[in-house]
Length: 381
Image (cartoon, rainbow, N blue to C red; front, side, top):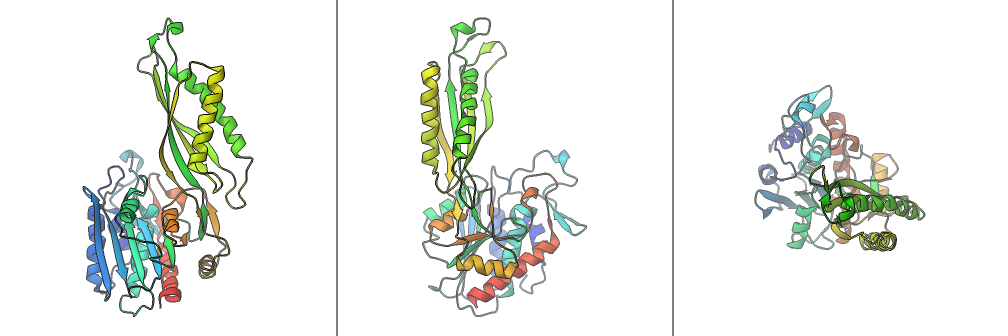
């Protein structure tokens, strides 16, 4: 490895071969492989730390270059979503294949291809004297509440101002994404009273009450749409899961719904929750049997690096493309809170994420590596 013989697509394939499905995670072996990879590079002024925060779960943080001279932060997650039904895959999800200029396997686009390109860009400069430092972070649990990065920050492994700028190598087809919506997931439980289905008058149907609430949610979505962010449009919410009932001839006493909300910066998760509570309260005036419990499961902030920020402009210059916004969420806002202006920029198409036969174009892996190398030249040399 120290002779730079592993190509970016070969490193990406090696990373794909680790089945880091979330759940359960099992990222530790993949993080350990990357730790050994950096050790083998024998980089001077290099600190490598495995951050184990749960059984078989770990992040990797690598600091290169002069201490106290902030530079670039490169970040990517090493967990992947479950591969799903193996019959939907042409070849096994964790046995990567290269064919017709593409690398196939779970995580090829989201986002072990991007991780490999970040590592190979750093490797290019392993014998160079850096004027500003590089921090590389491979995170666990991005697909589950960002729990790996949150643990890393909680344990003081990353602090305010540790880097001038941040890049997350999520799939953007090498376009610069400077902003995305925040998000929140709410679990809403409807409580009723069971009865025999032949006597519904003796019970309270939790599913039917939930249905009334879901219809009202459509009106709330329309109301949220009245406020438009110039970059990100409007906040949106959707009912994505509903579960309830125990038997076909029993009036259901309980029903659970999941409501997914994507928010513009003007709307916090607390604001959305207050609107949900307000909606339930209004509906209860017309439907006295309605009893709902609203619980926030998870939320994250928007990313909003300004369009005219110098780092955005630099990335636009290097890629030759104008910056964009995205509808999905990333770990970027957690770095933003640490006063590290961050963009999303990586190989692959987000349409390939989370589907069978996921792939990334090998040409884009090489292009991504070149872009990251140019960022290192401009900022750290």
